[in-house]
Amino acid sequence: MPQADDAFSTDLNEFLAKIKRWYATDHEGFKTMYDAAVENVVPYPANTPPNVQCDWKKKDIDFLCNFFTEWHKWQSGTDPEHYAGVNNGLDYIEKFSWINYENDYGMVFVTCGPGLKMTADFTNLQGMQMDAPESKILIERWIEDLGPKRMADYKIEKWKNFNEFFIREIVPGKRPIDAKDDDSVVTAPADCVINMIVDELTDTTPIPVKTVTMNVRQLLNDSEYADRFVYTEDAHGQKKRAGGTAVSCILMPDTYHRYHAPVTGEVVEARDDIGGVYYGMRDFPELLNKGNVGYGYDYEMFDHFRRGYVIIKTKYLDAMGKPDGEGYVGLVPVGLNSIASVNFLKKFKGPIINPVPVKKGEEIGNFKYGGSLNILLFEHGRFPALQLLQGQRIGVLQQLQRTEGLFTGSYHTQSRRLRSLTP
Picture 1: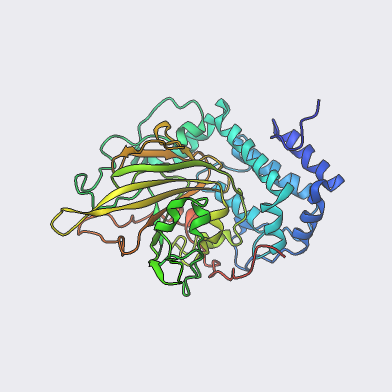
Picture 2: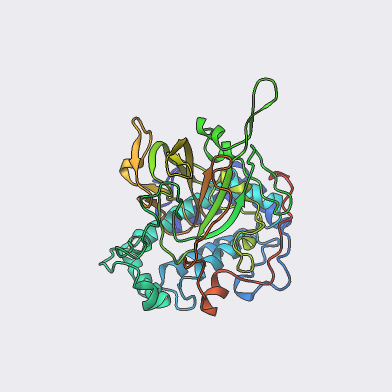
């Protein structure tokens, strides 16, 4: 008996048959939206590296099906023509992203209706692949690519599948928590690239130079705590609360994929089930921007992606180390491209009835295979800047191969995304 169109496919063949059927019957406008997307494709920049080029202009449904087939074969690790190393997954994401690059019709296709269902279905297939025992073939390749120096940070276990490896645990002591007993010190939630700090948040927060926007209320799914982080007015139009600060922490595909509490306190609210889109960055390549990951990127889309959040009530300290009131810090894990899993530990799953104590550095949850980031939210004036002490790590002198695979590219340009998402 054929599977219902809105249910996830059980294998690649069923998925391909479904989208071909959708195209033939224009199911929910699938053909109309796909044809409009490929008709209005914007050419990728002229000096785009060959490994991430893909011309979607006026491509038919067979081209789309063949693309998904090749991507699926790469991820299985069984295709000798396509090496399933740590960088290559980003290549496929980038090649797919050209369908919606600066293209309103492409954005509608991948973020709405049957196009959104298509990306959700394929992402689910990817998750099934990475949960299957056969995915262990990828573990050996990733370990080889990461090398013994980086693998020394992780516990070596008998992983049952690739996703178990992807959320591998750190060896105790390899990520010491700075100033454990000083509640005023904020620590990184994950192994990440800190790429964006925005002050004076409002509901939409346009930031002139960096063209950054972020809808905090939507990011937090209209939580009552959103008011703690954005500019608000009283009934007379007078400022009631100044806007806070957002800090974005991007996790690269080959790094540690668990995230931890940045401060000590109590979790007073949590959600790990906020639905959203899977693909649809208007300019995905810009996120990997000349080594300065995320600089100048338009963060407005992230409040549309699948995500969760925790709100931590924490104590502020004065210069003497004495209590200086209480406030809130938000941690928002966002699942991007090839990922739908925002997984919280059981104790932090909402709804939170009674506040749950949490220590700085304590694990909150993890992301399984795919791209991801954490956005930290602070109240006004409480996190004015990144502040480092002498001798602390500020970065790594990278191998050229990793830099070229994950970070850089001269073709990346500043965002021109100032238009709406609909044509």
